[in-house]
Amino acid sequence: MIPSLRETAAGLYGAFRLLRGDPDGLAYFDASDEGFWKSFFAAVLTAPGYLAFAYFDPRPMSADAGRFVLVEAITFVILWTAFPLAMHHVTRLIDRADRYRLHIVAYNWSQVIQTAIAAPLLLGTRDGTLVSEPAANLIALAVMLAMGLYEWFIARSALKLPGFGALAIVMLSVFLVLIMSDVSYMLLR
Image 1 (tube, one colour):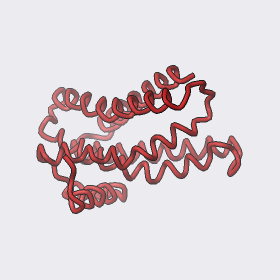
Image 2 (tube, helix red, strand yellow):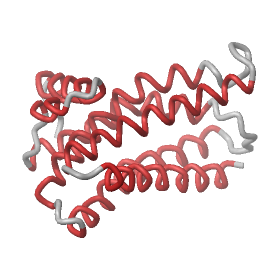
Image 3 (cartoon, one colour):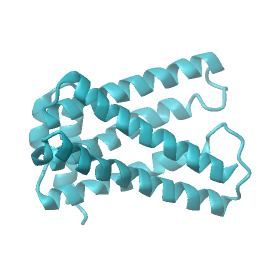
Image 4 (cartoon, helix red, strand yellow):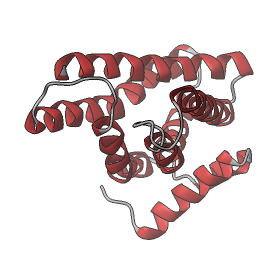
């Protein structure tokens, strides 16, 4: 399902409002079954940033272009499905199943905002020509902390969780990303 331009704008605006710390941004998301599935269109919008970031990974890789694209495409799809699947079970365990779709819709649209902000900042630090390695590491840490805080606010607002509960949700997301990053790297080196 492809969202209309208006639905896409509403999702991105809601995600931007959440980025600004405004929980009323949740009102811009369509948490219906249809809106839930349409929010996965955000993956299309984030794919170029993801692939660029993966391509400029400074770790040594020996894979050819075809293998690189295949592995990273599969990794991307897994990342876009693993967290929603995990959260389907987690929200049932924590008695928040009624807020599951809202959380995933907000999370999905927030990925576009995160990619738009993080990819240029992190790509600019990859080869060492713009900033030194220590500065690049500091920028990467700051970006990751800011994006983690953003996801924490989304989990806290959408799922109505206390701070530590929202932190556990963010840690689940980070854990899944780290696992998939390591797996894809092992397949490409």
